[in-house]
Image (cartoon, rainbow, N blue to C red; front, side, top):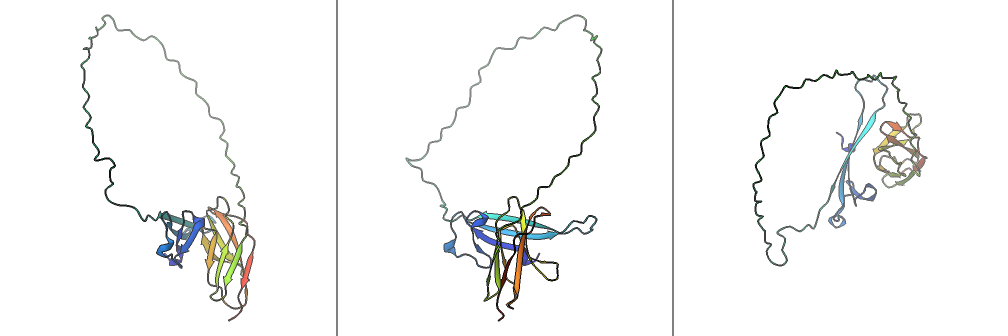
Length: 227
């Protein structure tokens, strides 16, 4: 598994409150009780035998652990002296009256004379095949991009799409196809391979629900002067 498939971040309880990443870890003073350490692993699944034209499906697994600090340890003091534990008395069984034996009836054994009547059998009708209607996935909106021209680091942010499982960020290439530069389940991507060559670099983002993709977002472009 490549290191680029693993992302580690710290947040204040939800994924939209991220305050540190593995590239810029927090100091001890920044971590508070209730903060979380979040580890995301992203891999792309592709079938070995392409019998059906299924595109590669990104699989994202995320786990979070809450940080517990300043938790008191040791015995707990009891106010008002030691607690008294009462031992419950076992219940006393009171014998009840002895059951009276029932008399066994005498005489001939009755013989059933009713003839069973067969129940009607339901004949199944034709089975209806349900029609699956796919709801279009809305495109991510408000894509914004900033760049630090001292090192070429690019940050992209966009609005969340309700129900989306993950997002893919693409850089427009000429000639096509466009190049995927980020795959994430967050609404942010830090991409740091833009060259300082004065060229314009254009990006867009697509939302995915399972393998179904939305329409592309608006495009955003940045450039840095040649060094």
